[in-house]
Image (cartoon, rainbow, N blue to C red; front, top):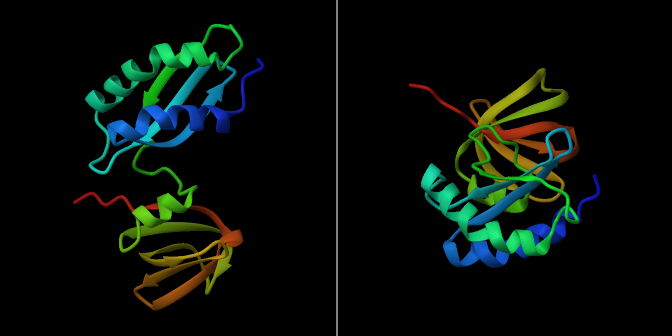
Length: 152
């Protein structure tokens, strides 16, 4: 199915998200079930009420935007989930000083899983404070990086 570019849709939705204190993390379209999913984040996390409020706020405007060129689709609004990978600079900023896990394409110092505290980042490198010390990881060696999930 033909759909409008997702970056245009993100820009459109930002105008509704910003006044609500919501950040558009990602937008995905599944051709399998014609579902348009908007992933959101707030300073205090996302709960069902936040998803519902944003869904209600964008439901009519997004239909006018017509992302699927008059073809039917299902609109979903969701939290990106605890283990979602960092994709944007904002994802990295939000997690500075927090525990992260980085899964690598190939081992560095004998490890393919790096755990530690995100200390710094730029477009080429991620710096993690591990139990063994500071480690600078080239971003092109990272398969997935996300917030560490701890169950106590």
